[in-house]
Image (cartoon, rainbow, N blue to C red):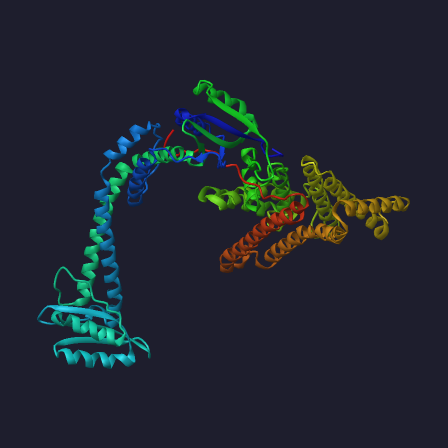
Length: 625
């Protein structure tokens, strides 16, 4: 849990006749990550011969999936053999029917959009009262035109024929709406006029019937198209209910087979042998070696290989499920290197504590917990992970709220008094406004501990990597930090026995010399920064007091009074809204600042990152088993 899973690099050589069995076994185990085999003496392999057939069926099923409407997930289907999968895929012949429905749907939607746009223009021209009557077949064109071109359009149409109708309405001093009805035999000339005036050639779509009122006709066409679209949607929905889960399970089976069929493309090969290199957890090596030998009747060679600077092991973190959101937070910054200490546990402990100290109100903590629980149910991905962190961090918020005696900004004594239970003190507390100096000192010492822990983890990291000189430098930084704090306490606050000052000064000097030895003289510029890092933790108190002060102001100025008549009901939503805003800002700031203190002040002392996440040869199943 404090360190990534130890990894082993292996080289495997086997007979080509066993290739399919070996790949199938390794895929089922899901515990191995292949790496591209590179050797100038051996040519690279190709995907299996069946791969093009699998790809063809995958493309077909993907097209069907894109047209169908997603349905509720049914129970997973048992995995079939590749031959059975291909055979079932070939029996599915709904792709042509769906293609036709999709084309009809797209055409219907396109026409509907055109008529809707035409309706907007006609509404601007006068709506249902818009009439453009001609005795013969009509060509309708409509759109927008600049006011200075409207007269030119009218003149150009007169040159074509006197039998036309033009309606226009000024939108503003620059632009007008227009609609034209003219005999269809003049269509090409009208287009030339539009082109010459720089107008978009927008014709009213052809209508199924002739109506005397153009606006009514457009509305009827829209209604007819909506009905047609509804019929198509119902037909697609019916096919989706019948085929969706079948398509998805077959597609998943094909994707699994495609993954296996494509795997040899990063292997090496000869006429009779295959060879590949891979990483796997050391704990899995004996088990997988034994099973590979079983399925190949011992006709396989497995060699352990050493890690090199050019080929570093991928990182596999192994934490309990409850720590998964904090593991996500670590990897969001950078994946640890495989030989680094995994900081997941440390951030899982410190982030909720920092968050709780900043928010520190029982009521606000409960709201934070409810809000986070709601987000956990409604979201996926990054927001879901953050909501889990929020939910865990809400618990310390409630506990610190009890310690600080804050309940939506009220103390427990004031609440008891408000509800008529008299003046009682149920437990001693540490009010933040009354104990600013004490809490400021506590936050700075917490920062010193957190930063010192970071240096200690850096010391352990360096020892594990064999960098003894660098490890000594990390210990020296702990010495500088500890002796520096004690010297300041002794010289400026007389809080440490003065007789210890020479010894502390000596230890401080030795620590500084050790830093110069390990990291060079330029590292001394970091000493003032350490003090700045510790004082950064004062933001814990600052944020908490600002949130409390706002809550107090809300309670003093906006708390509804039952004796104020109708004003009582007016003030309730305002009071709740202001507290809600304060809670939201407090929650957001506490999470951001808590994460920042871990990322910037803590991680910078030991964490390098830059590792490659372990990506096993496996498939996450949803529709099959």
